Length: 117
Image (cartoon, rainbow, N blue to C red; front, side, top):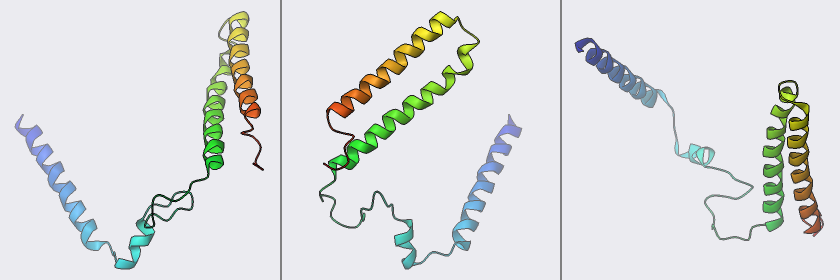
């Protein structure tokens, strides 16, 4: 038990020493503040937060994320082809692809895919 306490104290001391050394060695200046600030979608974080935001850009981003996640879910279906019954695999695959096509049709019907709006 004593050995565990000594080991944990040594780890805490070494971690604190390393943090102090890194703080002392690092060279920060007032000019580096802009470099460390977040930058999202062309918005300046130091300006007014309530500026108009393109809803079309938001919709395209959501469509990309949805289809990106769905593609990531399709990839494991390929190696499982040999592991399960073909009938079960084909039903699941057909259902998944059908849901993707329904979503694509809905987005096309709502004119979300037209960039010229």
